Length: 91
Image (tube, rainbow, N blue to C red; front, side, top):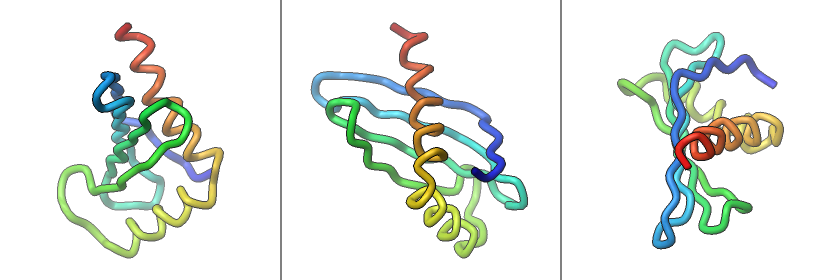
């Protein structure tokens, strides 16, 4: 797994929207920070969007990170679990 430094995370739940989470993080060797938004109706199958956190950066790095997230289940699960942990604390 790549070296990820989590800055912030959150997750909400509503019957209408299901689970909606966000994790803001940096990646070792990348200039810009990122935000991943996570969505799941029931909390078991997750869709996501990956964005630059503060300002646009090198698209090649964003696309490379997206490929890593697609291939590395451990990293994706870590990001989901990081957001889910914040939901549990809010309940």
